[in-house]
Each structure stands twice: as C-alpha cells, then as structure tokens.
Amino acid sequence: MRPIWTGAIGFGLVNIPVKIYSATESSTLDLDMLDKKDHSHINFKRVNASTGKEVAWENIVKGYKMPNDDYVILNETDFERASAKKTKTIEISDFVNEAEIESVYYETPYYLEPAKGGERAYALLREALHKTKKVGIATFVMRSKETLAILKANEKVIILNRIRFEEEIRDATELALPPKTQVKANELKMAISLIDQLTGKFNIKSYKNTYSAELLKVIKAKAKGIKVKEPKLKIVHGKTKDLMDQLKASLGTKRKKAS
Image (cartoon, rainbow, N blue to C red):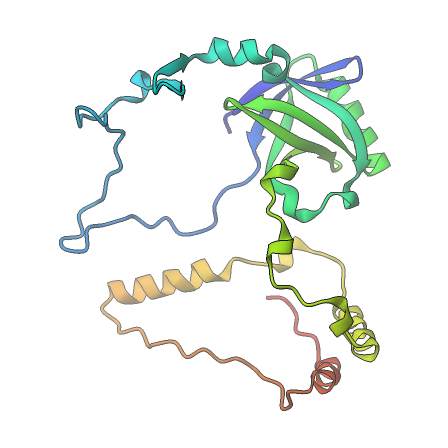
C-alpha cells in the first residue's frame, strides 16, 4: 500500500509521526462504459474549454474565481500558508464516547501507521484509546480540504475515520415524518420483543457481498450465449394488514442464519 498523507498526530505535547493509508477497497465488479453502437470504450479526457485540446495532469493547476471572473492560481505552498500546522498535523482537540457520534456523520476510514521514530508513542496512544473506549476528535488538511475526523483504536491499529461537518448534513425536518403519537404502546412492546429475538453479537464475517457474485454469474452466462431468465421478485407479505398480527407472526418465525 502507498501512503496518501504523511505528517503527525498531535496528542497534547506528544508528537507522533504517521502515514495514512486507505482502509477500504471496492468489492463491486469493474464495469467499463461503452458506446451502445459499436461497444467502443468511452474515454474521459481533461479538455481545455477554449482550445478543445486535452491537458496533461502536470499542466493542471487549481484556481479560485474572483468576482471579476479572474482566477487566482494556487500552489501547494499557498495551501500550507493557510495553515502549515493543519497540513502536517492531525491535532486531537477532544476525546468523546464513540456512541455520542451519529452514524450519519461517518464518511471514510483510513489506517494510521507510525513513521520511523513514532512507534512507542503510537503504541501508547493505541492502547490508551483501546482501554478507555474513547475516540479522539481531530482536524487536519488532506488534499487541500480541511477534514474533521475521529481516531479510534482496536488491538492492532489506530483507525482514522473522516466525519462530516454539521453544515454538510441536511436537515431531516424537511421530510414528511410520522409523529411519535402514531406508535401504540402494545405494538412498541411487541416490536422491542422482535428486536430482542433477532439480536446477536455482531460478526462482520457473516455478511457477504452476494450481488457481485450473482451478477458475475449473469455475465458468464451471457458470454456463453445462455439466455438469462427474467427475474421475478418475490416479496413475502403477512396474511393480514394488521400491524399487531404481523408482529406476532414475526415473533413466531425462526431466525435465519446469515449466509
């Protein structure tokens, strides 16, 4: 793996040199975009709007458009001038319980690896986070954008998870949502019983991306000239529209194991 950011974690007066690596990779099939007429590959090019000619990556710069339509061109030094500390330091400002952070704020996970000389301090922070079950809140700049993040740890690695700023989350009050008064006490009790019945210990290995495998079967069948049957969606409905009866019937259903 190649690091996508190098700098340091600021933990009080402790400075821990680290490298950031992407913690994820896609499990979906890589599908190409083709012209419907002759199946030629579709290319996406960086084209100069004035000349129509393609521009190489090394000739592309970033610019900010001013009110008079002129551009101010920025280079890497300019981004560091805005905040040299934030471009090189993941500064932990607070520690909180992870449960206090709503899932809607989570964005992208990364692994942190200690750089040379930072191993001991890295191990100390990892163990402290793991033992307290707390996460550190930090900000830093990556790819010319300020990032809000949490740092959490398991027994092996410190994980940095980018989270969204409050202003990036849309207000749910715009949605047509039912009031709490529509919930009946006996139905709520039954729903909680159903949740309890289906509750188990989380095991990520129990969940697989089965869609990609099924799609690959369709692709292989079409490659062999085998006609693929039109799918028929089967939705299991309760025998009654009464919510309470549906909940009772659900409680009587055996739990299916994840495949």
